Structure formats: structure tokens, C-alpha cells
Image 1 (cartoon, rainbow, N blue to C red):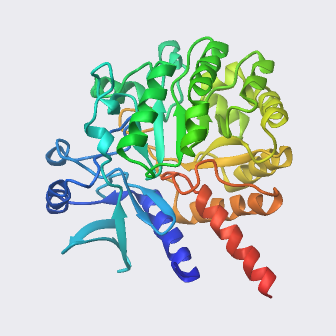
Image 2: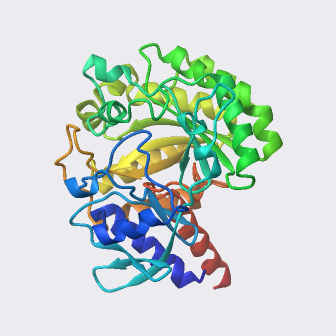
Amino acid sequence: MSTAGIHDAIDLKIQSLADGVYYDAPFLKQYASNSNAIGKRRAYGNSDRLPADLKSQKVPPEFSVGPFAIAVNYSARGQVRLVCEGNRYLAVTEEGGEYEVSFTETPRFYNASMSNGQPVQHYATVYGRSTLGFFTPGVCYYFAAGTECHFCSLKDTRKTLKKDISHFIKPQDVREAIERIAELDPGTFNKVMLNGGNLKNHDNGFLNHIRIVEEIRETCDRLGLTIHLITMPPVTTCLIDEAKGLIDKIVFDPEIYDEALMHLICQGKAEDFGRAGYERSFLRAIDALGVGKVHAGLIAGFESIDSLSRGFEYYGAMGVIPAVNIFHPDPGTTLENLVRPTQDFIRAALEELTKVYHRVPGATPFLPNSGRNAIDTEAYEAAKYEKRTTEVV
């Protein structure tokens, strides 16, 4: 892919995340007829505002252009439109730009079973083309306490899914699922992502993830899979040391740098940890895993660019790499009517994030080439391009 092509693809992703993606019934009819094209499963939340006539149909979760995975968050106002043209799929922008795109294929494991007779897909889901996602637990204590993050649609989505995806997964089930997937879809995936809701006891929630990683580490090493964990930190900070030698990359999610906004939007996390609590956790994780292996999960779209930039500098100075997702207003959430960040805002956020990859030696994205709602890979590729250009000059 040419340098110009990379910048075009980044701009296409910015437009998609800023305004959502539009498609119509004729497109979905053709998409549904393609048995290889994967359907959206909504394992963790629902980002679509589908009209009634499209809700029962198979819809795309993501598309890819070059090295970038791009989320398909449906919006009737989306300025990026998906169309079929013969055997080709295109993303068409409002300005008339056309990009040939590809859709993630349905893996064979989606039609396979575990030794207990349960479908493999009850345990694992595809995320961003090359990542196997395991979501456990599928519930979050903060909803019960009334202190949930106001953008999170986990509770309502899992009610709709019912038994499509397991709420709680045992370590041995994760290992068996990975082994089964390796047999059925060899070479398709290169990362395992562990994520989930929160337990009331954060120590137990963290250790549950550690027990899973202990079970799968040898299998993942044998299969060439890296392990990426998104989790709440434990209250007992020294427990983070158990991640040493087990986890390739870890994310703790403060979500917002501005402390006042964090208390307003993520009350549970703010009350349990706040900036100071997260800082202790990040520093301990850096000691255990090293610089470049620890990430701060942030959502761009709530605070100003100046505040977001200060957050990037704050985490980068610790050796923590921001993992930045773009806010999308999910139906049924407190913030369902909040306006998406503009294209200019996302461009500015990406530019500021690019500076982190210049400042922190060896920094790489949390989920390289898989973050479909994130701008991490895009910032990383932009930083590499800028470095090459500087070296040539």
C-alpha cells in the first residue's frame, strides 16, 4: 500500500468513526448471500442504530483497508456508505471517494462444537480480523450499583443475546477453544484478547483473568499467539506482579483523563480508583511487564483536545501507551444522544497520539491492526511514516 494510500485509509477511518457507516437493504441482501462474510455478534455492546427493517438481518461488524480494521457502527447519517459492485465491496465517501474494502470472513470455528457439546462461538468471537476475543464475565457489578459507565451498553446487549455468548468462562474452556480454533482455522489469528465486565471484588476479577492466562500461556506460545488483557486493576496492587511472564500487553481503563468528567461519566471507576489509584496500578504494571507493554484505555470524545493531550503526556511520561477508542453513542445508554466527536477532533486526537509513539521507544498499539474503534494502529503507522520521511530528508 502506498504512502498516499495509507493516509487515505486513515481519513476513511476518521470519517467512519466520526459519523458512523451507512448501508441499505439491497447491500445487506447481497452481504447476507455471501456465506463467507461474517455477521456482527455484539459480544460486548451494541453500537448500531438500525431501522426496524434491518434489525433481523446479518450485518457487518467491520471492514478492512490496508493495515486498518474499521468498525461498522451503523448510522442513517453516516457519510461513509457501503455498496456492492459486482464481486467487489466499496466504501464510498460523501465527497465521492471510493475505496475497495474487504470484510472479515466467517471462521470455521463458528460452526464447530466443544467437547461438552457447546458451540465454540459461545466462548470465542472474532475481533478486528486477527484477534480472538474472550469476554468474561459478561456482567458488570457497576450496573447493579448504579455507577456504571454512562456509555456502556453491556447489560442491555447481553440481555438481548441471551445464550449466544457465555457470561462466565472457565480457564480450561478457553484453552480448549483456542486449541479447537487452531485446528479449524490455522494461521488466521495471531492474538488472544481477554476482556469483560467487573466484579464487586476487583482482586477476584483480576485474579480470574490471571487464572485463565496461566491455563492458556503454554498453548498460546506453541501456536504463536500473544495474550492481551483488558481488566480493572486489583485493589491489592501487588497482585499485578502475577502478570509478569504471562501477559504480553495489559490495559487498565480509566476512560477519561479529566477527573471531574471521570466522576460524572464513570462514577464506579472514579470512586474505586480515581487517577491516583490508576497511577499506582500503572506504575506497578510497568515494573512487572516493562515499558511499552502497559496501556491506558481512554475514550476520545468527552474531554477537550487540550485535556486529552495532557493525558497522553501524563501516561507517556510513565511509559504507559494510551489505547484510544473513539466514542460512539450506543442505544439504550445514558449517553445515547451525545453527539459523536467530529472528524477534526479525531484528526487532532490522532495527531497528539502520534507524538506518544515518537516519545516512547519501541511503543506499539495494544491490538495492532485489530482496533476497529481505536486510532492506535493509525497513529503508530503515521509515526512510522513521519520517521521515515525525516530520515530521508
